[in-house]
Length: 318
Image (tube, rainbow, N blue to C red; front, side):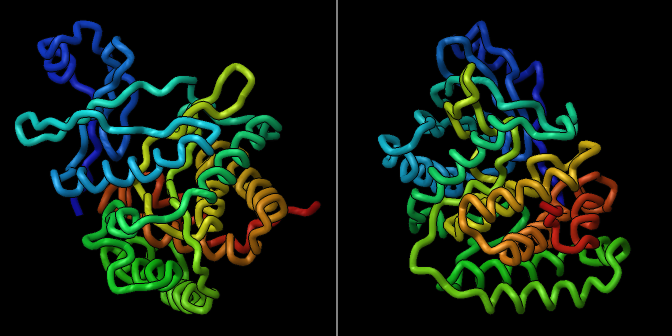
């Protein structure tokens, strides 16, 4: 597997300056692409490895979410213009207001006790996204690292996720097996448990990557924007969104395991999700993303996934 991770470059700054944006500056970068602030209320995103048809599908998903803007307490991205430069796709979007809730835990570790207003912001976002219905365009999305739409050939989200687990472990499972004892049994139990989950007639949009930089807030801590859909965006069970968010909110800080446990309990209680289902979805997430940042096992994400799979259910004492 080749990993595409876009980086900021001076060449792109010059490109945007030549296009009439002399104030262009790097803003953020990740797996999906690199974002530049253009200085006129807009941002440009240089996408990583997206083909025109796939980006058009992302645009449709953005539009599907934006239709619910009147009921959302925060803004979401909307693509205004798409262009191609030397084989690379670039989108122009309005800049969403607010500041990142905080830095990623790999850059700045959160304190032992997560602030109450941080938890409140997460609950606000999860409740709002859970009310946005899943659409056909969302079902047609391919999650990062896979070769087909997640829902292809499936009528239920748990079945689609179980099939993704099998495909993902087939990519570089030996890397994970070297770090996770009895991986084959974990995969078997996970897929069997997913298929056994009851189906729901309602599925919602799943962002799939609600890490701190992807939630912007105002001075009071209230969410103003949710951005960077695409890494694991799909239509699915709102409990999957809650489970993944609890797991990835703090991945690398000294209290990461504690924070995952605390958030898992909070989301189970406040959003009425089964703790067992949340734990199951967390295992599925680890099994489907372990190799997305490198194919040789040298990155921290694979070690994090192996650590999660090696732990039991993360529910702390009351």
